[in-house]
Length: 165
Image (cartoon, rainbow, N blue to C red; front, side, top):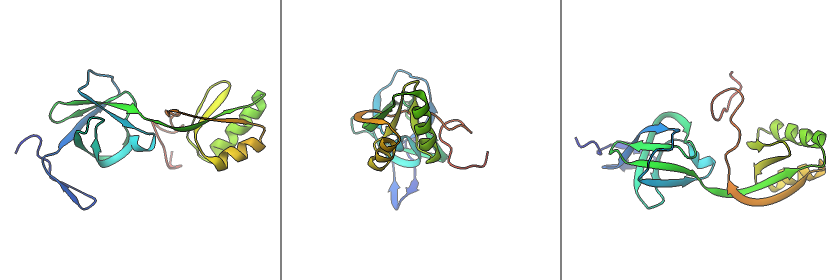
């Protein structure tokens, strides 16, 4: 059998002769192609992916993992595809003082929202309901588009979804 021949059943589609991801690395290796994925699309287990130039390949893992932004997918054929964080709608949360920022961060964490925190601001995916809540907590909310690479979960590497620590 050809190294590219993969017979995989996924969502009622039978993929034949599709290159498959063999290794995922956090290293930024020399690459042949790129794939731009938003935050949700970078967390997958089994899916047909299409590179930015239209090259189709398949990801088939035992469990869902985070595809690292600026990392590299190494395919069975030897082709290397750089993972890029796609731009998405975000919001910046700022406050007049540290106490108000800490209160806002507590409410964000209490809702298990992904975010990136610096000393003076919090970045979240755009959510108008959350924005209204934060405005009531004395936060200034502004909207913009950029790549979203939030903090990892506290109880594991990457994203965590359960409280089984």
